[in-house]
Length: 271
Image 1 (cartoon, rainbow, N blue to C red):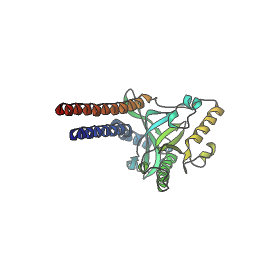
Image 2 (cartoon, rainbow, N blue to C red):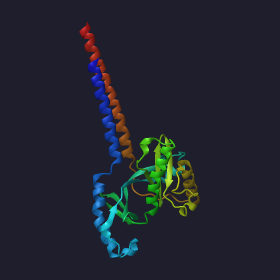
Image 3 (spheres, one colour):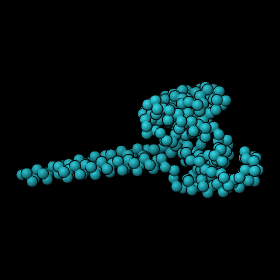
């Protein structure tokens, strides 16, 4: 029995190690993405220096102080799913892209975006520019609102400091939080811009169902497809799920096999 306990313990350790390894691979920023972002900063500085004002800078800005923020793998709304799905989940109607979004800061102030995407199998800069103030404010508010949820025990402790999933719908960024089976959305919209989005802004979480309803109404009114970007990487999600299931099945099989072998040995010894 002691041997059986040891084998079962090893099996459990194996499954937890495998789960953690697979999960980490889906969350961490790939090294090639981070490298491409850092290498792109040289080009970004050159472009800004050539014409600072067009990029929202002044001639007196010290571009050596430009800093990269944290990268976020963008998800995009699938227009067909938005139109036809009855799901109340933003993530159910979205897909993960090959694009990673960064905010570039100057003296801790958000200035512009840097987008890294995969082209011909290589990650490189695909876009720069745009005003990043709303997304930066939403990211800060996301952490504060999540902390408030913790204090009122409406969200699990594990969600503190967790990164939101950023879903892009046309020019809007939606920060999605999923915890304890509840999905909430923080639109990266100021109060002024939120007037066109049923007054849902970055000051408080909104229900995913309400956000989807507004997007469907806008899609119906405009009679146009939601503009997307990137590529549908649903195969990666499928790979993760199948790998996870395989790990569990193999581990259980090993534990059962070990139990049978030890039982037979014990029975033979007793005979």
